[in-house]
Image 1: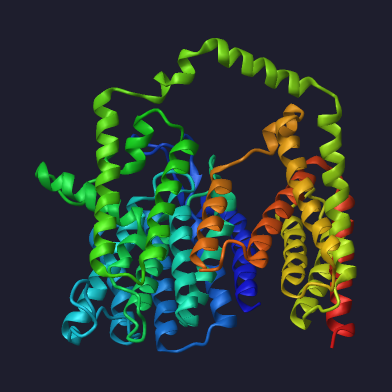
Image 2: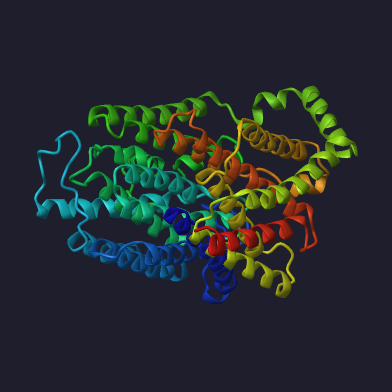
Length: 555
């Protein structure tokens, strides 16, 4: 439950802080204007890092035990937030940015215990002395800080890559007994999730240097603490796979610059995302491809973490060479997406368009039935499930009671339809119901279990049908994004990496139920323009029931 609350707090704080900073960004001069190296077309605030850092900071202060390591990590985070924000405003010289990174990282290495004492291929028996282990750690984290910064070139790209890496780092740390590292990873994941709400293409905000430097710093710090723990069996070379694309991208670009005699730090359009865009893919398609590649890196890192350095380095080399070779051959072949097979088959495209237009214009059962099923099924499930629970943990009851009061006040006082705060409250109630159902399931027979699973399968079918056969307004407003792909990739990878048998009901049900229920809630929020709709009333009733049971009934 602690990890769930850490995630919830960091997500909620990030979601609330970023809109405030977006309003202040023009006054602060923290706006990113388009130029020849950038792919966005409109001036965009560069303040997303504030939401990520503040969301993490509050969660860590509330839940993580403070010691020298955590304290100096928080110090470094605030230093990078300050220097990154100054760079977003004034475009600091590289030397000043580098000085800020050293101010943030050196104390963590000297007094916070972040050291690289074990190197790949040398085994745990060979330990580096402190006069080498500290500089190695500082160099590695500075490198990762800048690696993520250079990969922040498309909407949602850097945040999504970091989320996948931090999810795997947190999971491996949790399985390895490192609760502090795991909790910090979850807190930062929550901040990134809140940020991606506004950064998915087309982005309303960028994370800026304040966000990219902080996330890169965090990834480098956490992966060192994970692999350099003297009690761990995780091999140090797995860092390359867990960090994945940002490191591979930086190494490949620097190698290209070295071979042509250019500066290692000059800006260019040689990064993987530039090359994929050059093939004719859209921002959304390019980010989806890179998410998939990053998932492959991270997944292999999780699977091979306990093997040996030779295997890990071999797999990493194969993945890097494979990606570079594939892109090179595609470019040499002259293929571009605009010349792909779908552009050479106009008759097939015409048939597909006619079928789609028919679906849009059809007022039949495939339009209204899924809508009614979702609008009625989700609120009823929340209420009925809450009534059926025999055990509601006290902390969940307290959270539900606070959400009920806050949601009632928000509905009465706020006239904005379906505000971010309103949606957040609904998601918290839905997540709480699923959490209790999986963790403390009510006594039920086989047929009840079948009905439970059958309901969610029908709800999933209804959602898919509603997205395909729907009016144009719903099609425009309710569409899949790269964040949807990211959550699917992350969910599947974490399910496998958790070392739980694929047939384990609880873990699969948790992922399946949460995904379907969240999409159902979002669908209703788009369909229903009035504030006091079935979902809002059902969520409030569910929160009230959980609050009463958790605080007064369950012992």
